[in-house]
Image 1 (cartoon, rainbow, N blue to C red):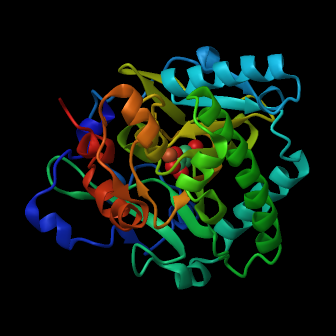
Image 2: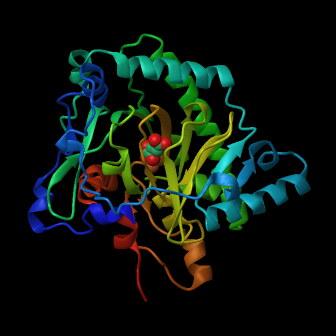
Length: 368
Ligand SMILES: O=C(O)CCC(=O)C(=O)O
Ligand SMILES: [Fe+2]
């Protein structure tokens, strides 16, 4: 796995490193300012000639029909719920179709987010990550390799907290309205999906909504921009990781390739057909379901020819929730397969963990 380039363990003094963000020069401005033939060394993850970023095509990925999942016809609905639960258990990632997110809204989201990344670096610098909990952060991300060196990912990003408090950069001007509307619609979809997964586990919907405090759920939007890269085999857009939270809804522009998911040790492309969105199962849903749902490990590879733009909306629990396996499932299973954790505390440590290549699920899993 390419994770070999990223260390699995942290040493005691790693914990002092609390700011893996960097804002010096955007990847975009480096590409724009020169006729770049070689990868600047700070982006070289030393993957070496043996690194294989190839993957099998997307064909076998599950496709879930949201309109069936929310159908008033009980047979259609229960079939869809069963299929949805299988996709969460087996792949931890799937395409969602007939989701009702308006095409024009997604198109204006991409156009405006792309405009944001085009703003001069000096203007974006005001959102430089001062702390891991800043509500708006923009810049680049560093990871540590097994040889303890820090490298920068080939990706410009913008992350904003959008619920329960809404934040947004002031430019480009339409961004605020578009994101507010998009995030609200995504929350409704996620609420339905959590309801469906509750149903599949024979848990009461209201009990689950309350236990996870969905009314005040933490939601964050992460936009990733990956310019074309002169030596894509030597770097990564994102190293293998799991998403935080319950479900991530990921919209990708025009079938742009790059995302890959790992299933039983094999990498598969996750390139959606037009009007499909991608859904990733998050770590906290795996924990809450006591392992019935699996959060998928995924990564982003970059390429020479085309840029990639992706907008991920991560949907968590309420910030003060102690997320552990649902009590009723523990009762049924006769044991808890994961330790409980406070959602906010996890979020604070998330970037330091990502920097160090530490897996939260590995740490939380109880081995009997
Ligand atoms: O660029 C992508 O499609 C993936 C983004 C992603 O995995 C993330 O933001 O967590
Ligand atoms: Fe992700």
